[in-house]
Image (cartoon, one colour):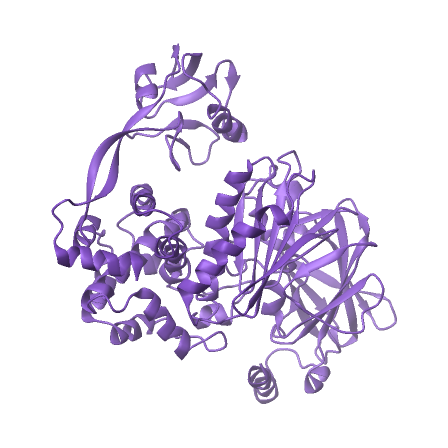
Length: 618
């Protein structure tokens, strides 16, 4: 970090661009303080002291977007009552340039800025594009503070490489769970943490409450699991054993990849009520992950979900922590240049989250095949003729933004295909994990790669066939022939009848929402037997079910309610078809659908079986 710091300072001296800061010479940190005691209307007060400026104007920013979210969330929208003060305590002139930027005049007199930060969980059901809960903030006075610091602490232009010292004043008995480095000599009810640069501020969430935590060791990594369960439904001890077993299997899978010595899992369990979190899932950080799930989940479902989401997030210690581009390393929070390689950051990570489970004996072959097949079928819902590198580079814009979820489907399948190619060409000795280790050894967390040349490097490390695949299916826009890749390992597609949900086929819904409206309609796809027998047609717009009107606002209630339907119940759906209302009545019955499955070929050759074993078991 010293080298980066000197580079910034030299540029400022030579070219006189951006503000000059007297305190830079001694590398004094930006000081931020957050008051968790005097909370008002689910808002906390923040104070930021940057040191003395020698320029006449300075900009202060709250991020527009942050790494890992791949969306513009305008976190500055949660800031109220922004004020700038001089060294005599007088209010200074400041101008809000846009949602995320404040310009301060006469900056040479600036002592500090103060502002209030709103709770994002409160607004999730009130806005069109809510902040994804694991990337958001919960401010519940004297109860819980789930804090992603990119929402609380901002930065001054050209000073994002400066260190930060952040202090939290908290209620009695409250404890912090975070990967941030704690500063010694703490005051009572005040914790102070240190970050080497602004990226570390945004990359280290923190949760304050009367925490329930468990710590365990995975080889040389200390893992802390912290749980907030508002009704006391779950404790950290309830899921510790499964998390420990899963993460030990992950570390065995990774071998000598060592990107961190500690890791924090922050689990917030939502009541699901109004003004609580509704965006369930997880967000990766380099040495921690934030997870938000419903407290009402049955224990086994909670554990299975935690295994799926945390295993994915933990594998981010490989990429982007150890292997990432300059666009990620020097991330511009308010005007980002996005990397072309989401196939790696999210796709390979998701692939590893499934591959390790079969390699370490946590799931059966059939379960692994089902997961691969589900990704293949789900990927069909997205634009299969879209270049993955073009999509990644433009992921903040439409139509690419609408295809983002495909990084967890086709992105993982890209990882699978590259893995099979490398296995085939190396006679089973090498795979994509070997490749990522090579890249990790070359680069590591402090050395980014060049976005435009990394694929050429990968081809040089591997085989020309890998280059052909990239040019055709990742850089190019040709859909992948999964049948051909599965055939290499003695697998094939087959059709069978299988029980489905009433409105969902696994994770694939039979329903969708019309863009620009709240109307819920049935997709033009092959429907299950229940919907077909009831008379539903693709394109039908749902108006009501058993007298209850439904649209986007309560679609979640409709889907969850359908899980409780039992066979032989009366059901009436009113739909709009070609502008006219149609009433459809009948009885519920077990929904069945013809589905595609992946099976082992009975006449697979010994070479195919050997390659399959190297791929799945090595």
